[in-house]
Image (cartoon, rainbow, N blue to C red; front, side, top):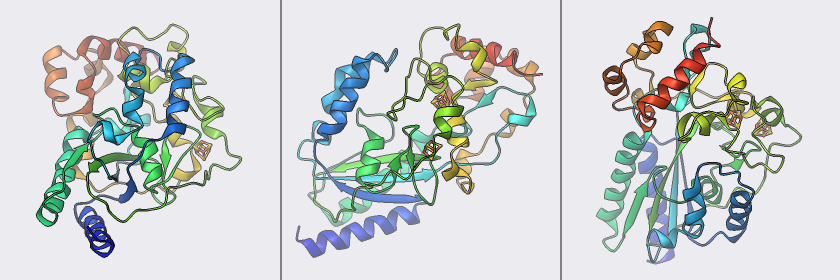
Length: 314
Ligand code: SF4
Ligand code: SF4
């Protein structure tokens, strides 16, 4: 494809992404990321990945889109705001992370990414594309930086200077060349270290990586074993995920609420009293969280987290 055609297609893709409701869209050239590979290897070597042993087994894939789509030339990265000021905190119930308030973001976002793919395939017949949201072994945050969406803050999450950090990252890898954005090279955290100082468990390392063994988000979502005894007193009322490091970040002070109906907290969950959380049956759990990211957690560990969280609720 000649340069002017690829520029024009790139602009059309971004326009389409905006029409579909994506808040951010950037495009990076596909290539390996050796520096990221080194950081990831070192992080795993220090045991910081906790129970996520699968991360060690797929490091090369995570830093090179060519493993996922042979012949990859470009990576489109989208951002979808999920911020809401509705944070449950004053309602004396177990706290869900904002990203888990509504329908499963995988399902919501993949449908829109696939509409972008249809749009591309209608215009470039030779285009092969692979879309995913947090479901393939690729360092999505690193690619968000490569595509110019923002920088990785000290809490490791990508911050966009206008949107803040409460956004989902969506990826399309494709085998055609496009017009590229510049990577976001500047780290704009400056002298701030609020997230490091206010993380309840001290999980944020000085080098901007996270110790998953201490991180409440990992321990209440991914972790398969019990929550370590020394972490329990620091959990607060959190039952699924933790937003603390994002809540204290100055870049989120002006975050605007999203306008995606699917990301809203369901009325049923909003109305649940602490007794209802504590007495949730398996059937109720399956029904209430059927379309929610919370279903990633099994019933037993979820209820164990509810019991722990309830100790912090008056
Ligand atoms: S999610 Fe919570 S526990 Fe994990 S690093 Fe952020 S503030 Fe710390
Ligand atoms: S709280 Fe401060 S140090 Fe942490 S990510 Fe935000 S700006 Fe950076």
